[in-house]
Each structure stands twice: as structure tokens, then as C-alpha cells.
Image (cartoon, rainbow, N blue to C red; front, side, top):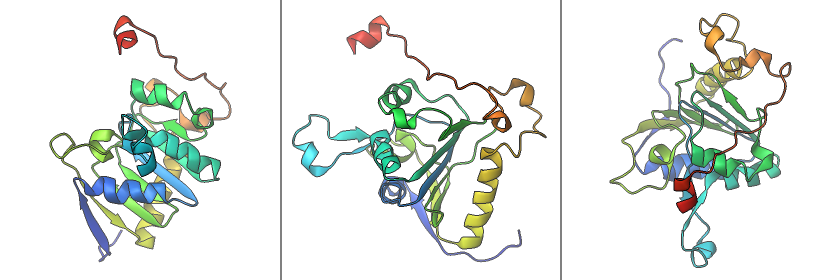
Length: 206
């Protein structure tokens, strides 16, 4: 694309939590996420709940489930198998299981969050607690990105996202033979049950 000026807001550090996740929680139409890694992501719970709970944090998956129940379209495009805590938490939300909103492509390394097709984060942060979550300044990753409402850029990134999501890039992919489930085959392969977690002595102690 030809070089041109755009309006954008730099996001770093705690700004990822305050700007990106705040926008996600206010979504009305859709949330499209792309991330190389996916891990459990904890956010500060409602103020009223803080006084009733020892742990003041709750999983973002509960909030995404709430938004999905309101009709918000969810998409999470990722490369790696989600972490064990993520899989354990998602098992509590049947509405969030399956490839209706979770799709895996090993070549995905882009990180973006697009809310309502109107505002976009594009940067370095994965969909993880260290990247976006409510972690202290001495624990979270050093991340940089930007937020924008620039329509041509949104159209361009959403177009790329849609091609990957719908399997439009699969036919020419040189890694197809080792792909765990080519996206252009969704609908023709049997639905896989969610990954079950094995209970170990260590996990029982926790």
C-alpha cells in the first residue's frame, strides 16, 4: 500500500490493559483477535465483587461468554495450543467451545484485536496475561503497539484476517502437510471434543 499519514495512539505497558481490554469489554458487534500464543488472561473483577472475593481478578473468558450471550461475534485466531489454565477455564463456558470462534493456524504470528470493525490494536502483545492482563509493572512484558480507527487500514487488516480465518491462504500453504487442521477443511471434518486435562498429583495439590 502507498505510504500515507494515519491517526493513531501509541499503547505501551499498562496501556494495553487500560485501552485494549477496556475496548474489548465495551464491544457491541464483534471482537476479532489474532495471537501467536493464547494463555489465561485475568482482569480486575467488578468492584462489588472485590469485597466478596479473596481474589480480586476474574478470567476474561467469563466476560467474553457474557458478550457472546449478547450476540457479539467472537473470533480468536491463534498459532499455538492454548495454555492448560486457558483450556481449564474455557471448559466452564460451553458457548466458547469449538471452531465457531477458536481457529488455529501455525503460521499466525500477527497480534491484533479489532473491536466492532471500528477500532483496532496492532502491536507486539499476545493474548496473554503478561501481554495484556492486569499484571504489575515488574511482571508484565515490555510491549508496544497502537490503536487506530483508520478505516482503510482496518479494511486491509480485516481482509487479511478473513482470508486466513476462512482458509483462503490454505491451498498455497507450504506447511499444509504438517498443519493440525487446515482451515479450508472446517465443516468437512468431524467436530473434535475439547481437550481434557489430566489430573496430576501436583494439580490436585493446587
